[in-house]
Amino acid sequence: AGKPVEKKVFKSTRQLVNEFQKKTPVRFHSKSKIDDKPELPTHFNAELTVPVAPKLAVTKMKNDLKEVSSPFVPLVTKVNAFQTKTPDRFKSDLRLQNENNGKTEAQYQPTLTDAVSPSFESDLRAERKPAKKSTEEMQLEYCTSHAWTAM
Image 1 (cartoon, helix red, strand yellow):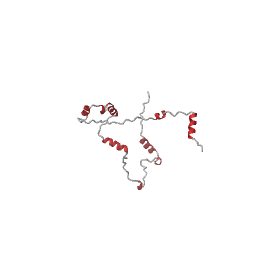
Image 2 (cartoon, helix red, strand yellow):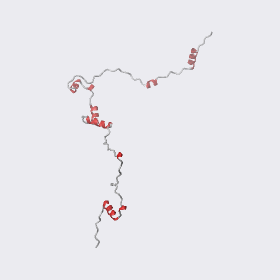
Image 3 (spheres, helix red, strand yellow):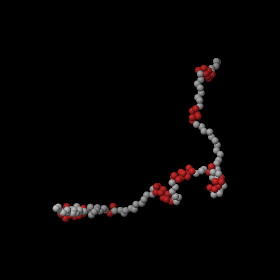
Image 4 (cartoon, helix red, strand yellow):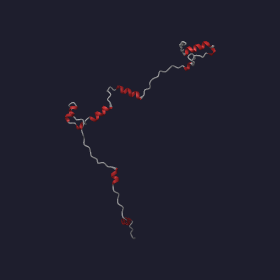
C-alpha cells in the first residue's frame, strides 16, 4: 500500500570531500592543512630541552614528611591525651616509679617562687587628689612665700 522506505546512508566528511573533488576541477580543490607545513631555517630548529620540575619549598616539605616514619596521629587524639593526662605533680612517688620503669627521680621538681603583688593602673587613678585650699589658706601661703623685709 505504501512505498518501501529507503535506507539512509550517512557519509563521513572524508567521503564527502572525495566526492566533491571528483566532480570539480583540480584548481578548486583546497590544499590539505597537514601537508602544508612551514619549514624554518636551520638556526631556528634548536634541540628540544628536557623540562625539569622546579624544586619548591613545598616539595621539600613533602619529602621531609615522607621521611618521617611515625604514624599519623589525629589532632583530636593528641588534644584528648593532653586533656586527660594527669600532671606529675599530682601523682604519688610510687606511681611515678612505675611509669618511669623503677627510677626514683620524679620528673616534676617544684621550686619556690617569690610572691609579687600586682600593681594596676586603676590603683593610680583611684588615688585622691589634694583638696582645694580655701581663700584664706591661699592668702597666707602667698604672704609667707612673698615676704618682704624693711630696710
